[in-house]
Amino acid sequence: LNTNATASTSGGMVASSGKRNSGYSQASLHMEFVEAATWLLRSCGRHERAIDVLHARLQQHRAPESAKQPIGFWSNIKYESYTATHLSELWGTRKEAACQLVLDSHATIRLLENNPRLGLNVFTVNHPQNASEWKQVGDQDDPLGHPKYPPQVVQLLKSINPAVPYMQDNAKEEDEEVLPMDSGRALAVTFLESAIGISTNRPTDEDEFDTLQSDESMQERIADFHDELCYLLLEGVISERGDQVNPQADAGGQDGDTTSLGRIYRQKLRRFLRWPRAKIRSERLLTSLPKAFKQEQALVLGRLGRHEEALKILYCDCKSMNLALEYCDMLHERREIRKEKERARLAASGMLDDRTTEELDQRFERENAYLPLVRVALESDVDKKRGTASAIQILALRRGEIDRAAALRLLPNNVPVSAVARPFLIPALVDSESQARRLKVVSSLLRARHTALKQQLTEAQLKAQANLHVVQQLKSLNFGEPLHSTKPFKARPSSSASSTFPDVVIVKHFFPRHVVIQAKVSNNSYAVDGRALGNIAFVVAESSEEAIQPSTQVPIKVLPFKATGSAWCVLVAAPNRMEGTAILTCELRYTVMGVDATSGTPLSFGQGASGRTFVEELQDIEVFASHFSRT
Image 1: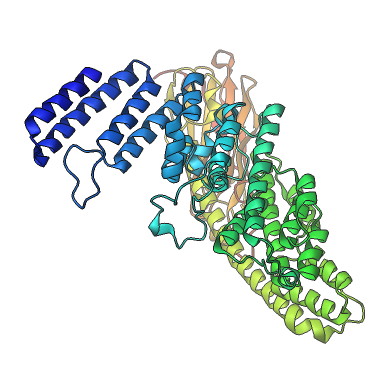
Image 2 (image 1 turned 180 degrees about the horizontal axis):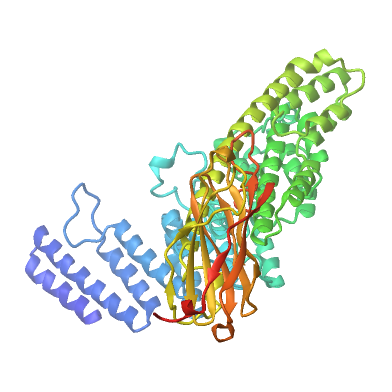
């Protein structure tokens, strides 16, 4: 590298002769040698030497500040980007020597001081950037999981004193969420927000990794970082307030922040206190909060489960109904999420039925988020009339989410009905009627969909049951090779049949040791008034030959009007023992199913018949021994 540098310098002195263009050409050649030498040093593992050489040569051959940069010179931003990429690659290896080099290097400090955002990216580039990436992160991959380096990064960032915030994002200057990189505190806050995941949409619900047993020492370290972030944000708010404290503004629920930076710190602090995944040590933080920080105190009390105390602060001390309602809305949303998760868990385990659903609704109804605010308004307000009016207002504003009966029981007995009727009772009644109508429509649609699906299922079952070789109950009987089947003939009742009697066509299928009777039943009788038939069974009640006896029946579960299905009856036969003709006494048993008067669909559609049952005697069927021959 030194030889190349000397050669390029001496060559430049001879060739330039004071000519500027020639000097630019030689500087370009020189920087090409430096970049190549830097890559060579990096490939040999001499990263620190590569960083130092590049910085030293840049000081000698920095591009002049002009509108048009000469070719071959490196601008400051190019050098910083190159260095940041190099450092981030070293940090991403997670090797001890490489990580320690990044933490100890002067280049890291220079980068953080001159270009804070780019320098901070060295440590955050490998953090998950969205919800899907966070879902794939286990304990071992957590940005704060390493026991050594995250604390050192936080200490390093806190020690940085940036120059004028370099290359701030002008496009984001108007965004109050963007924290200016003007102090070590701001750098540490931004790093911790990225590592914790609050700034990168880390999912707040549990995933498969959260259900595993975690390392307690690691959880303690993570809680330390959460506390650190909380105290840094609190320090930022206090430092921007200074001595300009307005007691009246604090008592009235206003923040009292005099600078935009203070408002950003406070906004971030409150967002972190509301974040469900925050692992703040709430008891210790509560003792550290200044008395003027009322809303923050309420949020910490809420994390401790002391919701009524939190609501007293928001409603009484801050004198803000809106803040109290926002707090209750947050609790209500979280409980609804928990309720749906519990419902999904019960459904997945097959335990969700009407009883468990009712118990689940009752349990979460007892934890209603708005009832504590009603009690606070009634009990804590000095002006009882104003407290009662506020309680009625809460009922009116959240009548769809609040337990209405429980809320009304909380109201004083001397409250006239007229005071509650217009703001709460009448709108609640209208909402209930509207909800009942909506549910009725939904119920009808679901019933129609259910009926259509049941009909499709029944049609598929009837189609499958019409084939001898497809019926499951018959496939396990091992009939052997079929001998032959008779021609279809119509079965007739032995005496006068009922008006609901369906059309029946009989086919006999002969096997070496079995007779299978197929009864094709068609529900065509108009006397059934469009209703379905259920549990249709063809039964051989008696056989004149002991050598042929009934064995198995396969009924039709349900047969809609104008549909045809097959019922089966299997008889075991011993042809060699037959003495003559076997006379089979047969019956057709079926039930005319009841009909739902509202929808016109059969009751217990496809699940069992409910209605009037008929037993129709049929004319006898004859079976000859010759039927068991292949002729």
